[in-house]
Amino acid sequence: MPDTQQNPIMLQTFYWEMAAGGYAEHFPEEKNLWKLLRQRARQWRQWGITSVWIPPANKAMGGVEDVGYGCYDLYDLGEFEQKGSVRTKYGTRAELEAAVEALQSEQIEVYYDAVLNHLMGADETETITLSSRSPSKPGQEVEVWSHFTYPGRQERHSDFRWHWRHFNGTDFDQRTGDTGVFLFKDKNWDSTCHHSDSFLMGVDYDYDHPETRAELIRWGIWLVETLGVDGFRIDALKHIGCQFISTWLEEVQRATERDLFFVGEAWLNDAGILASYFDHISSARLHVLDFPLRDIFRQLSEDDSFSMELLKDHGLCNQAGYASRAVTFVENHDTQRDGEIPGLFRYKYHAYAYILLRERGLPKVYWKDIYAYQMKEGVVRLMQARRRFAHGPGYEWHDACNHQVYSYVREGTDDVEESGCVLLLAKVGPEDNPVRRIQTKRPHREFIDWTGNQSHTVTTDGQGFGEFAVHGSADRGWSVWVPKPAGRA
Ligand SMILES: [Ca+2]
Image 1: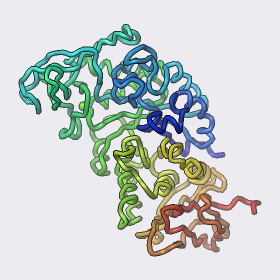
Image 2 (image 1 turned 135 degrees about the vertical axis):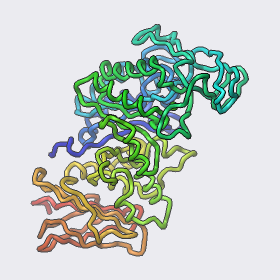
Image 3 (image 1 turned 90 degrees about the vertical axis):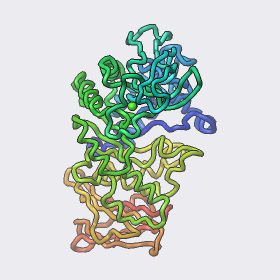
Image 4 (image 1 turned 45 degrees about the horizontal axis):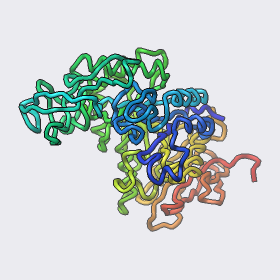
């Protein structure tokens, strides 16, 4: 079996509704995620998973109900009686540590979801004056939730206490009950790449304050040293100062000899703008989630007039020089939410086949698709195909892509026996069962469709050309043609 490190796959291990409402009834095992990670680690390794993105494991404002982004105490990983419980939504710190150990013993790296934009649920209010440039209540006095003392933790792991001076602003005045966008006196919004929407939620960190910078760097190092995480997914990147992120990446990496992995969530659908984000970050270690590619999948799902040819060059992963910086994905906890955000309602396997078999980008698969939406069998099949066949140079076979059909060849490599494949993705269109003549560079070979969507065998001619088929269908319109194993009927 080939080295899976050649073809890494990341798994996002949570979704917004996990362990809530009907999901808690259908999937009671998800009430303790950390235990489940430990139990499933071995199976994931067999699937070819090489890393997991875990949710923010710190105690959050909403206690056990909180997905984790309402960060209250970054040093409470389910260890102290705060916000109504010792455990977080996902379990206790001891259970988390056992999960990390189990995953790493299966050669699966663990990436922590770091929220470096804000805190929420302060212990005490402070009365402060707003900037004359504050969007709401300029120059006025307000009472804000900005003092964090962590009485439940008693200065374990850190004796740092947050005050209003460590933040830029917030959105709630306790004295009047008014909401707004409140910029504190003598403060500025973060110097991000996108000034227009720099405020997001909670109390917003002031990275110009040396104590803020120092404490957040100290926390990152603490996680690497005590929990032993292998990297980070960084939340809300476009709301965080670029200079601070550069420093944070460098300082946290400096604390360990292991190569850490960093992937940021910069939700920008324009690949050119997303690519330009890297100009502001000094560290070459940073990757970003490929939102532009995901937006192409959204268009495929929603728009009947979508041309499959767009799959050739859209997305960050297809921009020259950025393939290795992109983490490609189909869906995440923000792109689909029950009753709020519809997400992709068709062509999802097409999207998974695309991210898993192509040469560009590091694919991320999603827990909710695999377990809650019962795509496990099909997605695991595609992950196996990635591991076994998706090797060697990859390219679109130029005249085999059109409005209805996308096709892509992996040439295979001598290092991995019987590798290489022909990927075909087709949408509903004029042809029910389009066939494309494609060069495989393997003359006189038999190919079968690994997905099972096509049941016949294709034999290439003396030049290596074969006539490969795919259904023009949302339900069966993806095929991965692979060399038929020798000696099998
Ligand atoms: Ca911010």
